[in-house]
Length: 248
Length: 285
Image (cartoon, rainbow over all chains, first blue to last red; front, side, top):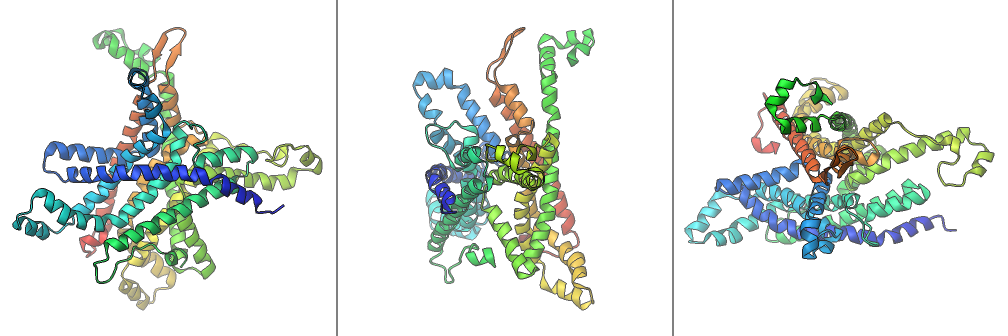
């Protein structure tokens, strides 16, 4: 028998679970991105109430572990099951891990992304905004044509890191949420395979390999977007990540 | 129960509701819950200590070791950072246990016992090792340290490179040996650049201690899970239904308080390591 056969078998078995992990991340990222803009602006707002609420939200989610957030929100949603979701006929949807997982991930990544965007927002040169005002631009115009382009370019490398961390956080989802049908993720599959023959190196190794490869793919994809964002710069800035740094 | 020890006068003054809740929150199970915070704090401190030592060693090797070792350090730093912490957290204690069992099996297993064994692991029953709770806690702390050591190494490798070359050249010119330059000048100066990054890693370690319950340690996450589940006793009937989210909320607040205190401590430390250094503020963020 081919000595590598168990390895190939594991790679094959874990291909679909890897898609589940990617789905969790891919569904949570757009939610986080959109809401993060709102919370970053809220943290920068001069309205005391909005400011405090945004700061509180960001501090709450960045200061506590995602693992406990999963527990807390899952049990919170469960507590409303009999009184709210069941009568509305929504329980199959609200309690489904493919909805709840990205929802809680989205809450978490909103806070982290908002902090990154807020940091970038502070560095937008005042002069550019004043110039835009002098041209008679409205608030909306000023944001979308001056602040936002500056913000996203500055925030992109840090945002890339956050996306990779979010992807790795998807490993925690199924430690809390129930598995429906065969929708196991990588960690879950590795555990099931491990229970059969106790070969921790093979099964956890292959799961780790999937996480590593997909993380690298995310870095690569986001560095392409960064290059496009920076295409107007005379010396195209490249993101710090490259393979030579890894093995140099 | 502790409330039984309260004088009757005080009980009357507080009223039955408050006395009930005082009793509820000081019953044996809740006291066990409060006591289990020690495991979390111990894992935090042990993890941070191991991470700092490993990180320093890996960063030093990564920046200026002999070539194969340098690759090894770079591999450690990048592979561990590219893998979810929970995966390594589950992997390391099992792998360590199996490694010990394998070494033991070469000593104690005879061909007869090996033939008897039906399962895959351990090779024979005599080579079975089971750790105690305390040993598991140490293993958990060490695996936290190994994971976050890679992050620390990344921060410190960057900080070592950020120390101005002139400082090191001046030290060499004074006739200091390589080791003296490293310990007296290089590592001393590095802290300024490393501290913001180290603060982030510490926050991650704090949050990662919530994973202890996955290693069968009765930490306060497991306690909260049990205390919060709907509670029914024959004597008192239904004490409460599913209260888990309230207990998890307490955990969340605990973690937020710990990170808040850490933030303040790191601010003080940051101001301390910066004293007497002529640095532009933007270099430190």
